[in-house]
Image (cartoon, rainbow, N blue to C red):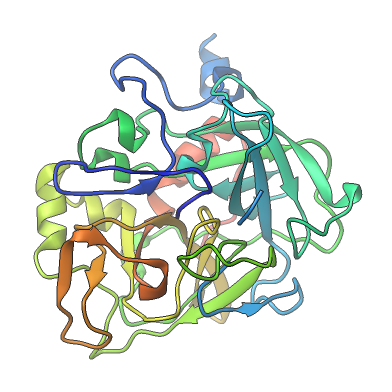
Length: 330
């Protein structure tokens, strides 16, 4: 989703809401500090959920596993980047890759993890420093890859110094993204803005998006085929999902990297993480109920409740191999 400092970009016909850097993709490795990648070792403030309700850890359906990430912007001593994340192991958090676009790419500790219901009103004992982070080796910021490829691989793992705080718990990861139905309810949590104007009270919020058979979660007709034609076969089905439109119920700036939960066998599991919106897969709806018409020159706003999310299942192997940590999967 959108973080505090972000640039609107035209990527062929698509615009992504991501923070970004200006370095050519064919020169720079954007995966993060190489020392954090276990595979390499073996070889050698502002931002909430739109339309949501303030949530304490006890009121979120999965328990205490949504955290805030406060990252230091590399070109400023004062600006902070706010993102959300989900605890998937005792020392591993998943978030969005684009959250790290504007941090020092060589810093293993570019910020902190906040274990509290607010990223402002927290104590020192409720925060731990990031000790390592990593993105997929083929991740590209939107500013550095003039194609649809920057929509893919928008995921990162984060490790932190110290032990998981009391009362916090891990959540299982859904390993089959193809099992996500466009008519099933999704629950989303995060610390982002309440609306497009930037209104925020710094609290963790949760919202349910409830599609129906007559109003399923889906991109406009033909958008998936077009996206796959610009990337590769089944790219969308393997790595992305769209939620909405669901007016007034969605994610916004600061929710980036936050969880999308689905219900499996009476358990809530982590299916996807918040990414953003673009004018191909989630353009701005011109009306509030189906059949929808779209302004394909613009991406959806926060209030539209329409966005693109990174499914996690096909990243499980990369996460485990590069971090050296085994996930609990469903």
